[in-house]
Image (cartoon, rainbow, N blue to C red):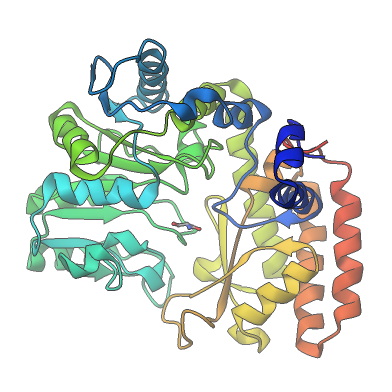
Amino acid sequence: MHQPPIPHLASADPEIGRLVEAEAERQHRKIRLIPSENYVSAAVLEATGTVLTNKYSEGYPGRRYYEGQQVIDPVERLAVQRAKDLFGVDHANVQPYSGSPANLAVYLAFCQPGDTVMGMALPMGGHLTHGWSVSATGKWFRAVRYGVRRDTGRVDMDEVRDLALAERPRIIFCGGTAIPRTIDFPAFAEIAREVGAVLVADIAHIAGLIAGGAHPSPVGHAQVISTTTHKTLRGPRGAMLMSDAEHASALDKAVFPGLQGGPHNHTTAAIAVALREAASEDFRTYAHNVVANARALAEALVERGYDLVSGGTDNHLILVDLTNRGIGGKPAAKALDRAGIELNYNTVPFDTRKPFDPSGIRLGTPAITTRGLGVEQMPTLAGWIDEAIQAADRGDDAVLDRIADEVAELLAGYPMPGWA
Ligand code: DSN
């Protein structure tokens, strides 16, 4: 059952109560390979469910527009201080509601509508809010986009430099949602300096790896750092903006009153708890294990003939191009879901198929590493993934159901915070 137990919810609203229980059980029995998902600790989960949700606190600690901040102010100050200590930054704002609003605040802080901005193209591994055409950031700004090389699957820093010199963007985003390789923050910083742009490192995917020392840090290279708190960082759904002292005030004004109203104080408390956890020695081990598991899984998939974008991974994420397997990413992902292996279909660089029916699948190891799976289990996972994809091609649902049972049997031995 769900942990902590939810007796009041179950009795006051049995329909929602049952659905919450069902989701807890689903999360427990499936191998969760979506690289942007994780399992929060029981302490983080408890913090999100507290009476702090009842309080309004527009403004910042010591400068609020509502009275009664005797408790909320120290909560937010703790979260800010822990973020500053963990990442080694001058300034942190823990109020953005999630990653997209955090990134929007960056535009509001440093750009005027119509200004040129630069980011990685979405189908190449970037994020919607890095100037993709369907996003407000692509509609309200003049976005130019870099990608990866066709032959290496990696960002071509010469292309980034040429584009930046030609287009002179106000801000340059590095980072994204489907990048399996180390981000070269010093090289981006040099280019940004050369063209007078603000460098924004969107570390949403890799924040936990950076905190745990398993990926280089952008601090000292990017003036602004944007991150969600719920991916590898293993906190609640939320976001943070960090910066050097020079860019702090513009960011704060952009978050509030520029874009948002009252911060979600229960989330702020849970972020503080997650940041405390991320400062522990256990978390360093966790971050390194995430990368070791991803490498082992990538190697096992390559051994089975899978074509990985860039040939492998340096971080928590693997992007598989299924073109050589004769199956699209969407039917593969749906079959894997039936087989108890949850991931998402994804475009691959230079994809010839549409985003809603692309050529790839994206997977990662943050959640399974939290469950305690290690490199020794990765060949088994790769075997199940391979078998399920072959079964999907034949329409063999019996094999998928058998794998789902085997997956649940394996996971029964690996506890999940939030379920008992
Ligand atoms: N939804 C996030 C991800 O899955 O990477 C990005 O916003």
